[in-house]
Image 1 (cartoon, rainbow, N blue to C red):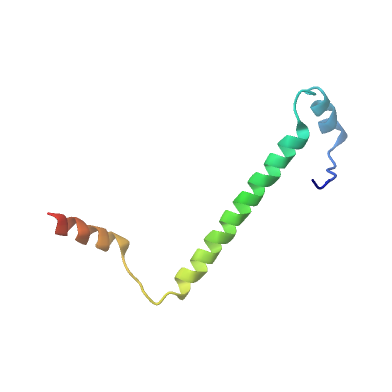
Image 2: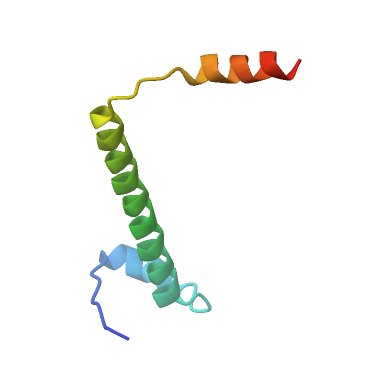
Length: 73
């Protein structure tokens, strides 16, 4: 496992020391993993938007759904 140094303000460190039962390394690992997940989702969303913008096919999903519902009747 790699080691990363994180600097926090002294006041925050004092508050953290009050809760020694908390595994702060695990808290930080989870926070980093969540932020990476959000960033991957943001990138995926941007990629989808770029692909949609390039698409020549324009269709109205509402119209398609209505047509399907009409055909079921």
